[in-house]
Image (cartoon, helix red, strand yellow):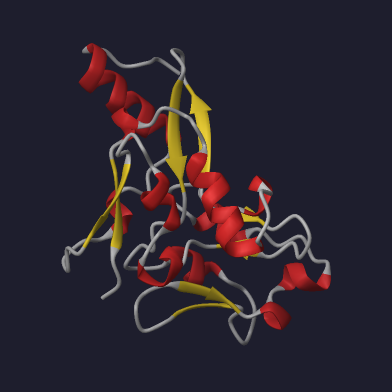
Length: 172
């Protein structure tokens, strides 16, 4: 089982070093639009939350893929992979079924290839966690970990965080 990413939303400072490290690792350039992790500024305060594919155990994005030969699949370690030639988006069709099926709204599309981007945890050594100075991202070897527990809508993450930090929820 690959190493998992553990998130402490209350520790994220919004520095976006994780985005830069991911882009540099994947594209060899500081091009944050190509990063598999994004930092969203949400709520009042402001709050910053790291967002990326959490590799849910049931892979709703894979199940939602309409391609007959399945453009999306989960490998033996549970990492979601994209078969470029099979993805409708690589043929100019604006399919967003994987994005809509994602419970954490974490799927972004590559600005050039237009393909969905999924965190592959850098082969077990996530760059984002390595550069996270605040400790908001950390690596765990927990075998029973299911990333779906993090795959929540941003409103729920923010409301839960506000409740824990301030004793109240944001009304939306």
